[in-house]
Image 1 (cartoon, rainbow, N blue to C red):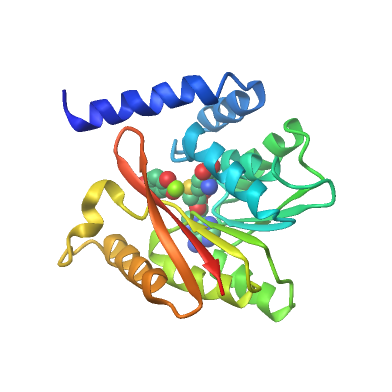
Image 2: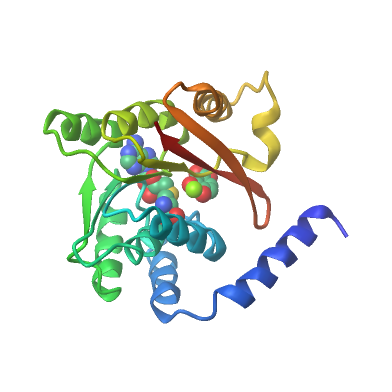
Length: 221
Ligand code: SAH
Ligand code: DHB
Ligand code: MG
């Protein structure tokens, strides 16, 4: 048995135990598929982890970068208190449209605001308009933008804010120092930065599904 088969089985085992059928999340992924969006949402178990992290940090204001069909935003949105708010940034108008319908179905349309446009442009406007601070960030859009997204998150943060970022291991590809892959190089820069940044304490948690990936957890000091 290959390690990854075992990894998939472990992920399935955990999902069966802790993520019983959830009609809203199931329908969200059906809509993603129906609309022909890429199936690159977080897994159910990673979604549950996002929900737990947002809950235990007590986040009231969350900023997500990379909406897709809204799957991860629904997990995060469910952790918000009644007066909480999540802003999620998405470049593709089709993804925005699918996600908005999913937020309505999830009963979260009043708490989740989707903003369409290139993430870095929207973030620059948010800094300009003094829209911070946010209590929790989830970075999950274009991988070459991660180093810039981190800088914007820091600008929109307060001491104690939590910064999360997905896809930091890429099935081990990030361990190749001389990789010609620009995405790998951007993620390597991101990982090095969160590991050594004077304002951050961080760790990457390996995430196992059909391959190996990783989620970072950072706290802003
Ligand atoms: N967080 C989602 C998955 C996001 S997939 C979930 O787990 O459910 C990455 C998303 O980032 C895609 O929808 C893609 O269109 C979007 N994206 C890519 N480049 C972007 C950019 N420059 N600015 C904002 N969003 C971007
Ligand atoms: C990709 C993007 C993601 O955010 C993800 O979780 C998995 C894959 C991708 O662009 O391939
Ligand atoms: Mg991702």
